[in-house]
Image (cartoon, rainbow, N blue to C red):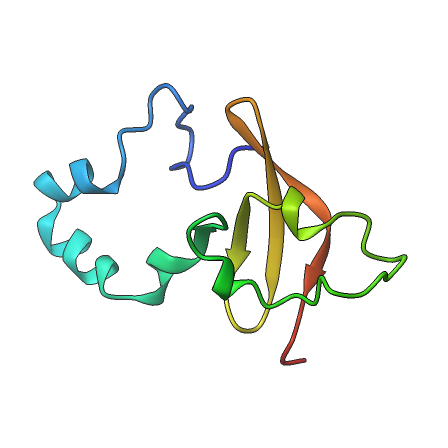
Length: 99
């Protein structure tokens, strides 16, 4: 699974949102000020944004926070991904803290 890529783009072809913004400045500036830009976060730099409870020995949580490289989501639902090689793979649990 590839996380955060534009539709039909491969990792080798994806140029990033900033380069798109050079030609599509209005759309880019509108998008940049929304929470959509924060839906995928590198856990190594945003560990404080992880909402799941990784402190217990819950048998339904088959991985530790140390295995999480990226989170996808926000306040209402977070999913967790592990990076293997150049790709991210969703881990088999999610957090829904406000439900």
